[in-house]
Length: 388
Image 1: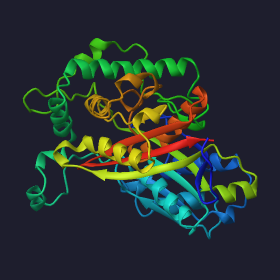
Image 2 (image 1 turned 135 degrees about the vertical axis):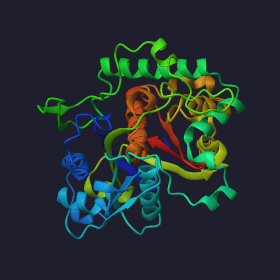
Image 3 (image 1 turned 45 degrees about the vertical axis):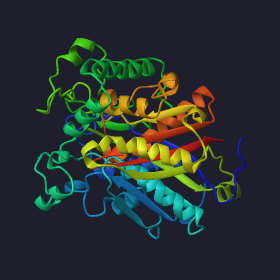
Image 4 (image 1 turned 90 degrees about the horizontal axis):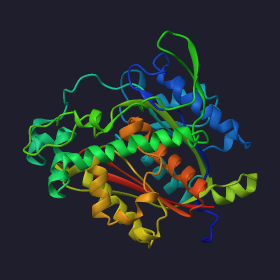
């Protein structure tokens, strides 16, 4: 195990809520700030240290509008009963929102400008209109069709010769992995039970992800037709992630502070990066960010024993596997499935990926892990951790 320095950033704890359908799941009666605050409060209750030492709450939220607007991070901080002196702010970077929160916290701690951060990710309100607010002039710099993710995913599939059949089979495999993990109780350690409601209004403790269908067959996925009108289109509702509600949380701090307070660190951040590519092939930025992180950590993909690659679509996932040349490491990639089966709680995704990554590393006794994702319009993020 590598030597840990005093200003290295360590993960003391991380957790997530169950992931439920966006508009009709068990959390539908909860206000977004209730969902976020209850998760973070439960996470903090596990640890004893001076809450006044928290340098800030940083919340990732992909769509900070409607009930999630007006710096919901501050309202969540107050509802979590953090000291009023603890500041809070939101970050919006679509799917990368909560991972970017971790990146910001990491930079400040490593620069000795802070020592403790409470991080969150939240997505509970999605805009119901597909109308874009982008300026028409922007089409000079990227194709207007890049506003719709289906096109960029289809282009990648064409570039890497990935058929719809391959994508549908990969999507089905994701559902099978999630079902097997649920049956074995492998998600229990990462999910914090929160009160929700059943469809009839009855109170219910939500402890399991509810998007996955146990009776789903490959034929159910194959019956979905492609969304775009591109030649050889393959991106469909069956082989891509659907919007979901959920929250994620993480407690990070300097190794020095953790030792001072007697808190046991679970992992140390070894690299975090952001990279960009042509918006026309937006999902490929995941590959660029991953390569950049590996270079920064002076590692290769073969050094990584556990991967979490965001499943925005099967074509994005399969492209990453091929471009990174990690097909021989399939057993340690998304071991428990991903967003195609679980649903995509966009603002919570970054920390959710790292939470799933760390728990899988602990369950399989693995040292190095990597989580990566892509963001609309050609951006990607990656984080590499080492288990302590």
